[in-house]
Length: 547
Image (tube, rainbow, N blue to C red; front, side, top):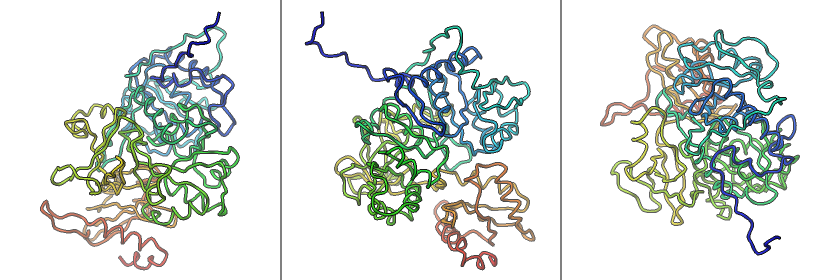
């Protein structure tokens, strides 16, 4: 007998990442990669088998695994398997150098790493081999994608991904060791020092934030889908991926961003949502005609990384029928803390910021000099309060305490001003962090490499617009009688740093432009930026040569 008067049982919201797959039909498309669609059934099965076999290989709850892959379905197979185990994922950008990989693996204590040795003509494999064994003391397992049978590291166990996810004649245990309070993600955040802090996020906060973000951007609406063109190894890309999965909408992956390919995928898959940096949208719109080339696209959510596009991009987007929405976030809040309202005027929507996506979150603005809270409309440091914030920096209680106020607000390090509706407008970063290729880059990381070169006494790095986009430009002062070997400087940077951190040029100047202040002389970065911009123009080459 059926009681037709009873309401259907309410499904509890997921509190662990792998719970987000529960209830989805086996045959439904979860994501689309270069080799075609991946169903929920396949993802459930492969991630469950991988979890069981990684446990057999010694990984246990509380361990950390370095995930060193581009945007491919296997990235999510590994992440979901780790969530079953209660193992934290430490994403690595595939363009990192040996110094950065060694630092992150050492600081995070990674017991395992997953990579494709053949990717980028073997670059990742070579980087791993060049990491000092002292910087990977906990590493016990290397998992490889592809057909290579070469041993990457002597004395470290190696397993093939394809064999770990293969079907078994005997039933494997259903691993569900992960808990909502487990750290599931550890991300490096660039600051003004050469030692990035490692941000810790838990399964429960990840899944809750994903649900709230999905509702805020409209991904919970029927017929929606998302094109992901930014790496999942960063907070923004990771958040977009799990937000789409949480909403149970198709996620279309780009292994790397190419404007023409993005334009094609937007049409082919009738994509409704895309988010990324403002220069990504500018490049996409530059390869398509005006009108409405993407009829299904409901919005492009952008992070304001390129100030030069602030006035150029909005009318360009309007001419192409693309609705712009600005966003605001940081690694410590899993990127999408705030979103501009979809129905707001273009003047507001085109700016970074917005209203908090979490109903229980709030923000305020403080005068960084006096410490006083500021009224709406006045610019100061933005402070945010959200239950989805990081739980702290790994093994760094001092930095964690400094990041939060006594009443629990997170200090963002960003200038902005509050609006009457509880939202905000982002103005700029307080600290002089470079924004390169969609990443925050510490200039100190670049400067320390160059300062190790013979004869270099001072080095300062700024970001400037170049023909190839926004790039780092380094300035050095040499010892008397010494000349700069620019080729050697660039070679040193290429050997130790990610590609996007390598300066486009290194210029030698007689002295740094400085201004005297209460705490001593301060380098005038604005003057260096102006110099870099002028010298990187073709007409400025003569000036650069004579500097």
